[in-house]
Length: 104
Image 1: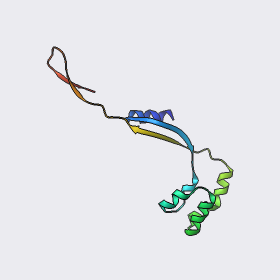
Image 2: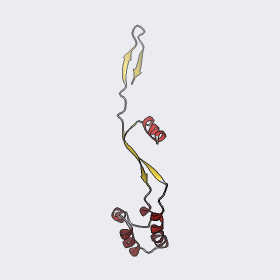
Image 3: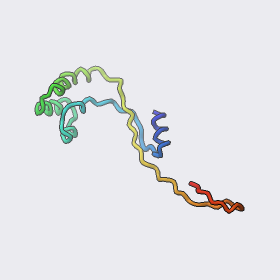
Image 4: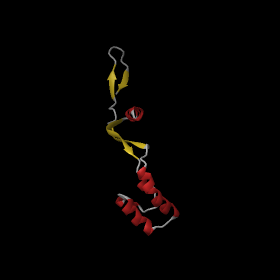
């Protein structure tokens, strides 16, 4: 995780929160975008699959109990970050030389 956070900081982001999250297999079914918001478990997934009985949905429904019996080692890195303010560039004169350079 430290590598991901370092990449975000180098890109100019300030990390608010970062954690590991378990992969949720409920979203890998054929459903409308509004229906994805209502998926909370096996029952809600079964209701959607009854509306759209595709081969992929039926196989996902049959495999779901087996997937939940054996916990997965897959995890996602979830990072919430905000873009840091851009540096302000201002002109500064170098004393005695008359030259101007730009500092951040």
